[in-house]
Image 1 (cartoon, rainbow over the protein chains, first blue to last red):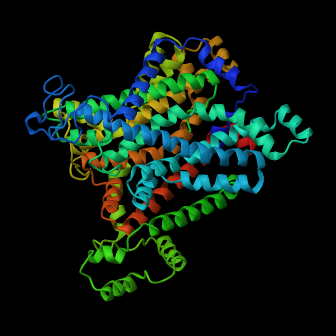
Image 2: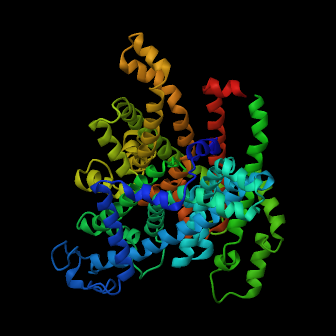
Image 3: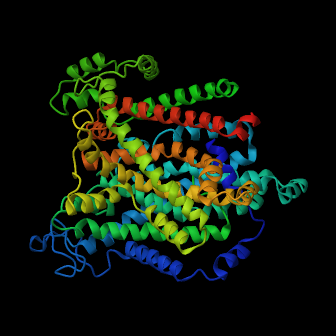
Length: 297
Length: 315
């Protein structure tokens, strides 16, 4: 049933070049909300890239005198239970979120997308086998699978990215396969085949350009989910290890001070919420431009 | 019935693959369980070898797998070498907590989502619809643990209505049990709520444009009757499927929520077993959860065809 649900939802393709698609995406107005959200995402990305050069305090230095100080006192966004500057920790913590969001989605997209396109194009035993394997992977609740993977490959930034990326392979394979199935039946693929184009050429020139847009459009929403997944892992103390600050880890620390200093948990929570909300919003708007329906994967 | 005979082999195949995958995943974890139990450092290699022999770790992987699977089919998942407790007993003793949590979460989510989606779909495009959908959209950006913290902050720390942590079993006091379960269940429900609402709203809007709805309207049926009697049932099928599929999300959420609220459930047991590297326990719990998930979704699939005549006659 699962495949039926997602397949009918996603089937959509476009026989047009990139430039036409780009005009369609950026041509008409998106409204102010879209640009505010996009601006916030750019800000977060810039923080992640330039964290070391930004004029913020040392994220690791405990200043006991500032312990649990609220926002707009000694520290702009307050200090945590050890007297470390929350703003600095947020800025440095954004690195983990941004790097993992980008790399995990890329891993899922490239591996899952490739498998999905191949399955949708060649069909047969390969497709059936792949779908069966994906069904088995999907039989594990994501956090259960993730905890086991992390126990297996460790807690480095790289390992966490790979583990979360692995979780995304089934979803991307399904999206790519569903789109490929509809593209393969179009006349231009038949025409290319009639002209004697090689399989590789058909895949790269005819199928891929028409599958990649819906797959990419799904990417931003996926990044929002990856940030949630990573923070859940960090909250359990199983993401990138201390002393590297992470948003989920900061919220987890803040939980201890809920009764006395709410801001320690609240500030990173709001930051993360805004980031995920922006990703969802921008992703959703872009996706509705492509008219791709696949939000329930 | 024909459906059952056709789908049963698929179910068994999936379960077999799931058990194999679970076994391999956990067996390939780094670290020798024997060394882990005896404690690293200062242990003679003979003692380690002796324990490996006792645990049966010297045998080939596949032999161990079929041995484990055979016992598991008989309901015996082994005994934790750390605590000496039977894995099956450990799971069963904690299962009621997790089931109660999950069922309450799904019920709360459905009870809130169905009327909200109906209102939203009926007044599609209005300001009311947009604010409901907007709140739902925002809820989807809140992770379960963040929701739990907010609920603790408001209802436990702020208002003091419910306890922030702890669990009272149903057998001790039903009211205290509900009070200890409500915040964890709400944290899980809020995330599900957004998803259910969005899905049902879309489906309802589709259904409301069907001819038989126009006919019902022409007959002069009141709107609430049209919505509940004629529109809800055909719109609820994808909701049902997603409730089944989202069980994985609920279980994942339960691991975190049980840890935050210190509830003695299966999720917390899994998390702590992973921290302690109690491999046999992890193996047993993962197998149990994955099996439950596959079986429930199989049953949802069956119900689906029982409830929807269109699917039934197509068979």
